[in-house]
Amino acid sequence: MVVASDAIPAGETKPWYLYLVRAANGSLYCGISDDPQRRFLKHCKGQGARYFKTSPAQALVYVERWPDKGQALRQERLVKKLRKSAKEALVASHGVTHLDSALNPCDA
Image (cartoon, rainbow, N blue to C red; front, side, top):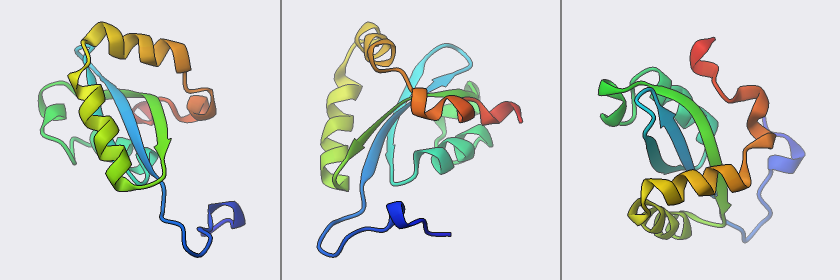
């Protein structure tokens, strides 16, 4: 179902998102997607990234919107270069209040 607010105006590209997922071992996985909730649910099922075969996805902890895939990829490269402490600070400073109701659908 397409909601009016989800419609993309003519001449604009679909937004892409950089996201961070907390794994069971405490690590943070960084990725991009045009639908971070759908991608997170795949990670919860052990699909979409080999990373979660050894330490299952626990929570979607950070989402950042970008105008297109290219910009999201550039940001992903930058975030992946950060130390874990910097990624944790990013998560702590921005929070995910808009996703609070679906932080951990893996438990459902």
